Image 1 (tube, helix red, strand yellow):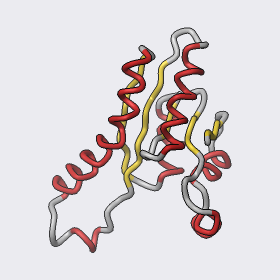
Image 2 (cartoon, rainbow, N blue to C red; image 1 turned 90 degrees about the vertical axis):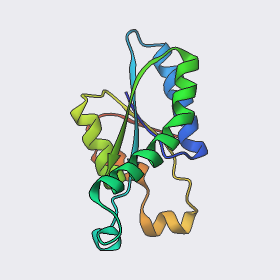
Image 3 (cartoon, rainbow, N blue to C red; image 1 turned 180 degrees about the vertical axis):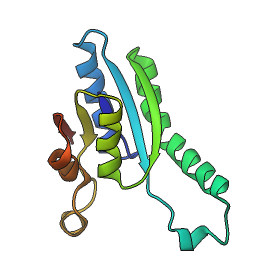
Image 4 (cartoon, rainbow, N blue to C red; image 1 turned 135 degrees about the vertical axis):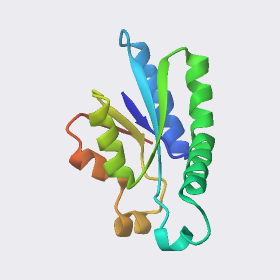
Length: 138
């Protein structure tokens, strides 16, 4: 199962929920995924090299993954972790397809109601475009 995390309280709850699910399924494996937004090329191209941008994305992603890794290490559930760069909903669904995941688990949006209406909810977009079941956790 793919568990998308963004460092929010809701995504940490999603990890806990996925651990509970995984404990009931023989040979379950979790893929933790953090999606970093792409840097705008005009914003950084004159300041940083592509390698430096990638290092920053990796460092930011690893910070987000740390708490989820701790929960999974303590649980004994098998997992892998991945950092993607791109639009969150598309990256989550692409990763789930690429890794042949049977389910996607992610936290509910932590944005306020108005912002969610304007920007759209990642969870809603994932549920709309994914071809596997999606569990949204508060």
